[in-house]
Length: 186
Image (cartoon, rainbow, N blue to C red):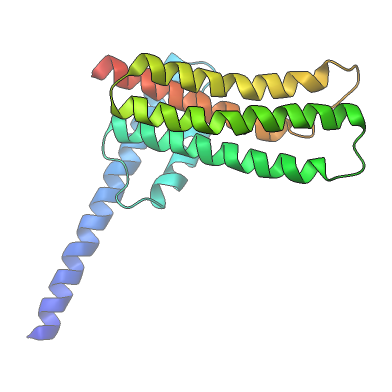
């Protein structure tokens, strides 16, 4: 009798977990689809893959658009922290000349400063202060472009951060697109 009760409880928890994961996956897919229709910079496949991966690590996963906006903004911040770490390692690489190191130091400062902006954006989202959230997310979005563009100022220079800047840009675009959708549905 006890075994069957445990089995029933386990089955209920498993069902609820799978149902919740399925709902989160559907929310992500539908939100990415809508956002990619409204923003030509947003790549649908990247959106779904990034957010489903992040969502699978959250308990509970986001169940509404507000949760999705906050999660995507936190994912952008996590990526920004990773950028700071990558740049720190690159700055120690002796093969880069002073011009590249100066660009990397500027990128380091940009990404470091954006971390608090992204924290502020999450707070603003939760307070439904959409204007502040949009300003903070836009500032973070500009950092990836500014970082990448610095390397192009010297003819023939190639950024060692191109791929990482593109990922950060995409994550910001997702957060801004979701914020706009949340603002419209609120």
